[in-house]
Image 1 (spheres, rainbow, N blue to C red):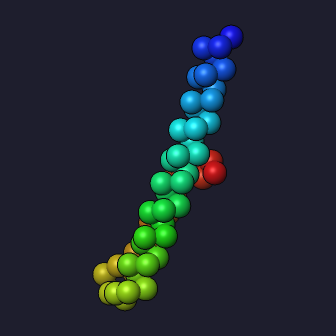
Image 2 (cartoon, rainbow, N blue to C red):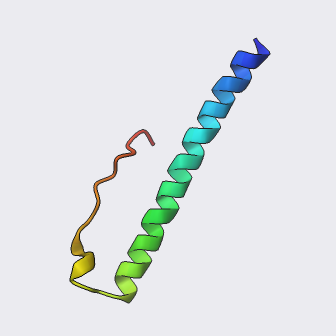
Amino acid sequence: MKIILFHEFYCILWKVNVCLVYEVLQFIQKIQFIFRRDKHDGTKRKAYIRDC
């Protein structure tokens, strides 16, 4: 039981970390977009992580 519990906890932790990293990347992209408004950076990537 402990192994299964640890595995579930690890999966939850990994998902939260992925969401956190994705949020940070989005925040950095917004800051970069604000600082330099180039026409080339107009393409916005769709979020492929929607589990959050």
